[in-house]
Length: 191
Image 1 (cartoon, rainbow, N blue to C red):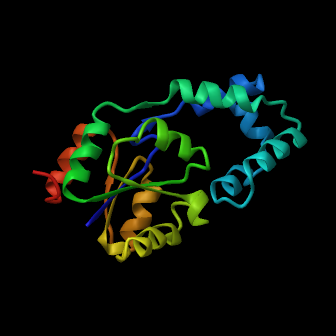
Image 2 (image 1 turned 180 degrees about the vertical axis):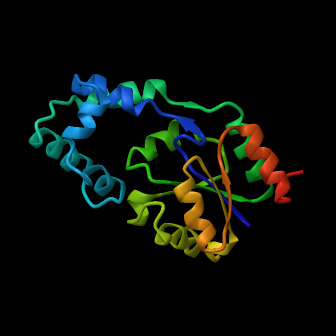
């Protein structure tokens, strides 16, 4: 069994909404309305570069400071309570990976927050497909030499857990570290 943890909202809090709002000088809702549909997903899938993403935002009328965005985002990133310990406990017993839709910024998160943990990081920007598409889970399983049925996903978004369940994998819809740990015990993956 390979344990797959989502990153944002499951392991780590990332204040990206606040960072976007402050860097763009508007509310996050205003930012969302002005950002071209599918632009962020293209960045997540690695279809466009980060530079092209910022250019497209400016072309859509958003005046945003990418350096400020990243500074604010990084300053507010932190582990959710109990999750670093849970990842470490899982990694001590099972192959444990991160499976995230986060764009290229995941490299900074891996360096700053995930360092020292014996885990692999699989991001949509490298896989070319994002959750909840079946291809996301199929590619993680393929890279690990397994089948999607051999994955257990811990994710805060039920559409992602449902997608893996449809492929025969096990899931935990994340609410907090105690609940996740209890469900992993229920699956016989932790003592």
